[in-house]
Amino acid sequence: MQPISGSVGRNGTNRHADVSVVQQLINDRLAGQLPPLAVDGICGELTIGAIEEIQRRYLHMNSPDGRVDPNGATFRWLTGESAPAPQGTFPLEVIAAAKASHTKWRIPASVTLAQWALESNWGRAMPSGSNNPFGIKAVGDQPYVEARTQEVINGRSVTVTARFRKFASMNEAFDQHGRLLGTGSPYTHARTLLPDADAFADALTGVYATAPNYGAVLKDIMRSHNLYQYDR
Image 1 (tube, rainbow, N blue to C red):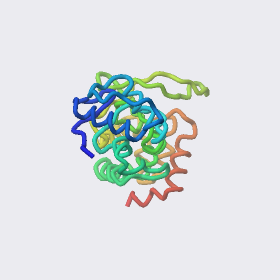
Image 2: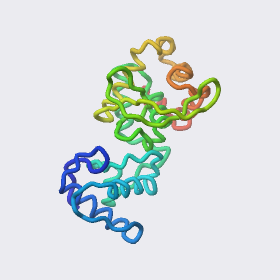
Image 3: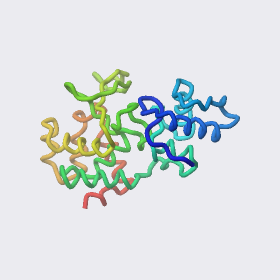
Image 4: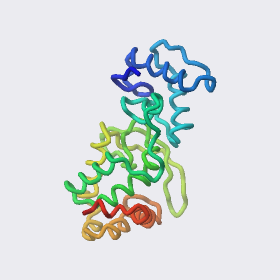
């Protein structure tokens, strides 16, 4: 199958030839399940809607981004190359990024991996177009996307619209996550507890996230998946 040279869909590059390839793939894979798309190389709402439906129905994304990236999970599904990693699986590139962050910023890879799993639902749910699996908020004039999210305010869980950092790549997101925890003033106390990964995770409660059980959930993921092995 012909590869695509750039992204197709919402906020994509949407080159005419690439859009045509994706439209034909969608028609082939979803024959009889959705009305066929016109293979016209124009990325309209019907094409984006079909991409979102695939991501929601077959890739189990809670927040579909409506975009097909070259060699991304959606493109691989369309070409039949592979299914998305099942929930509970840490892709090799995610492990490598967490270990690189540990080396550079001294933040335990076990904590970074647990946060990746928790904040992004195992890579399936990120603010559309953000490359931000950690729920990092944007400040000042930083690039951002807006998305709905749950916050605990005065003991009550409420839905709010927040600005999330927009990163150029997933590697940049992991590096900036490490920088945030490794140098940010809100995490000064947490860093005094290193290299104890469990204590560091506990100290993120009420600081990185408002959920009162945030550290406990991170530790449960760290223990059940033996993530401590990546701290060595």
